[in-house]
Length: 112
Image (cartoon, rainbow, N blue to C red; front, side):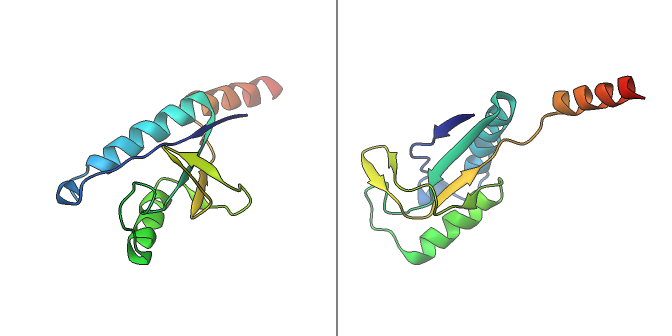
């Protein structure tokens, strides 16, 4: 199993709600699906070296949750950019891509 820890994806507040973060995450998740790679990150608003808040952390958890990330406290600490953290660790397992479905369908056809 391949695992990739994501470093900081930071969209300045004035640039949010324009789809930029969503586009980045779709590309990253699409790559992970094709490569069958598990992604791990921290939805911790303090990781970027700025003052975080519980509200900002909840927003981040919700944002990453839209892409299939789930909170997972079994991971322990991860290294993100310059710090170790164990706060709001989220994991995303790769999703099957179309080629996987085609191979499974072909396998079922052969078994008939």
